[in-house]
Length: 175
Image (cartoon, rainbow, N blue to C red):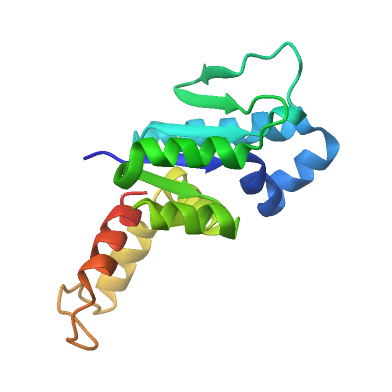
């Protein structure tokens, strides 16, 4: 079952230090920067992504639903909050959805309906890791020369985490 990443657009922009600087200059530039960032993430991970923005900040001539480089972009209707749109999509997607937001109300709603949630800052970190070239390969060979040998031997407590927590980890690991 593939994941459907559902993003609270302005929440992610305003939580990210880099994107919030761009957003302060221009709302449209902030949206475009986020979409470019997500497009490069999508090229690597291939998960379906939907970004929801409040329609109040959108251009009047802009379409309510559109696709941009494979990413579904949704603007809420005038007078409707993006939170309502996200909740509606979560109701439809249920366990397939991973909601990216720092908004506690949306995160709680998603968790109650079986969707996974991830904080905006944490997701931004996962995007950076996925889109940067893997620089640790050279470090690994240097460390092996020094006598360090990679192992799969487990360390730590043998206590097994709950099934719910294991399922959550599996879903968020795919990000």
